[in-house]
Structure formats: structure tokens, C-alpha cells
Image 1 (cartoon, one colour):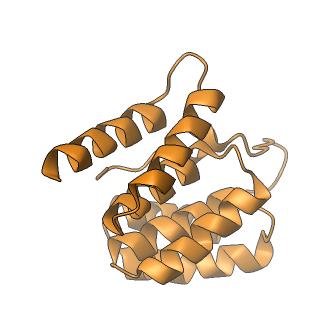
Image 2 (cartoon, rainbow, N blue to C red):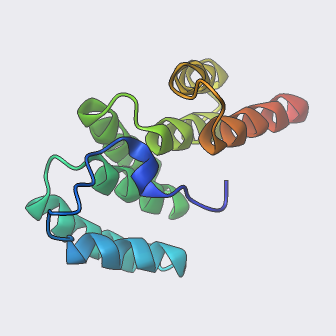
Length: 139
């Protein structure tokens, strides 16, 4: 998908009393402007101050995927999913990355995870399902 999901959909504890990670916000904003290299710079700083935040690693994966850095993208998505296996964005994006590497089976596994998480449907499920359907039609 060309857009990226709101990171608050991760299920990560976004307690309003916690200070906002400025580097995370800058990295997020740079993704909105398609400045993926700059977003990585800020997100790597954010990862140092918030090493247990799956949203940081999800966006690092997203930025690397947009720069066609597949191995790095997998590394960061897997880190995000290790911290939160039910992270909706990371499950969608790693599924899309598996399609890019012609691994339909793994993409479908992440669609099943999203189906389990999103009891009443969610954008991440719909986007990955659409991507899988397009992939199958192109085969």
C-alpha cells in the first residue's frame, strides 16, 4: 500500500502521560513527505530512546521497504512483531514485503494473523487482502 497506517493502531501503549518521542514524530512526519532516508535517521535515534516501541521498528521497516532495502525491512518488521506479534501495521507491511519476494504463503500467514486480530475488519487486513488478490491475478 502506498499510504501507511496510523501507528496508534498497533496496540502499543500510547499513554498520554509519557513524553512524546520527538525523533519518532520527526521520522513519522518525514515518511508522510516520502523522505524515507531522513525518516530512517530520526527513527534510529528514536529506537535508542524507545527500544521497546514496536511502532518505531515498524516505521523503520516501512522506510527501508520504500527504499527497496528488503533485508533491512524484514529485520525491522520482525523486531516490531517480536515486541508485539499483534501489531497490525507490521503484519500488513511484512505481508506486502513477502509478496514482493514472491512468498505468497508467508503473506497469507500474516493475512490470517490480521484476520484473527481484526475481528470486525480493519484497514490493514483489507489492504493486505487486496495486495494478495492483485498478486494472484498477476501470476
